[in-house]
Image (cartoon, rainbow, N blue to C red; front, side, top):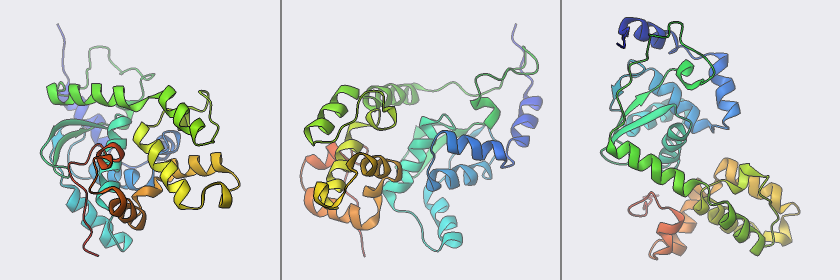
Length: 242
C-alpha cells in the first residue's frame, strides 16, 4: 500500500518557494535566459507548488513591464515557458492558448533525481500527465535532437561543429536555421571573424527573438510556408503594431 503525506509535501513545497542560491545554480547549470528565470520566479509566487495553476503570460508580462520598463515579445514569452518545460520545472497539463495554460510548477528538490525523500513512503503527490502532455513531450523529444541534420546544415554553411559540441548541435533544427539567417544578416564571414563563437552566442541569446530581428524575418518569410519551418510552434506570424 502506498501512503501519501500531503501535508508534508505541501510543507516541502512551501519551503521551496523561497528563491535561493540553489535556484541560481540551477539556472546557470541549465543556461536559463533572463526571461525564463523571471517567469520561474513569478510562477513560484502565484500559487502552491506542485498543484495545478492556470497562469496568463500576459499578466506576467505586465509584471515584467512594471519592473523592467518594457515587456517581452510574444516569441520570448513562448520560449521562456518552453525552456521551463524542457528543464522539468514546469509540467504542461493543458494548453488553452499560447499564453493561457494549465501547468504544475515543481519544487526545486523534486528536480534533483539524486536526492531521496526523507521517507520512502512519502511520495510527492503530482497529478499524472494527461495524453496532451505525453504527446507533446514525445514530439518535443523527436524534434529536439536532429544531430546529423544540424551538423550537415552547419558544414554546408561553412561553419564547423562536430557531434561533441552538444550545446549547439542538439538544438532544435529550426533554431540552427534561424542562427544561420542571423549570421548572414550580420555580415557573415566578411564581418564575423569567429563564426562558430558567434553562432553559439546567437543560440544562447536567441537574438532572432529581438523585435527588430523578428520583424525582419516576418517581412521576408511571413507569407511563405518557410515561416512555419522557422517557427513551428506558431500558428500564425505575430504582426507588430509598432
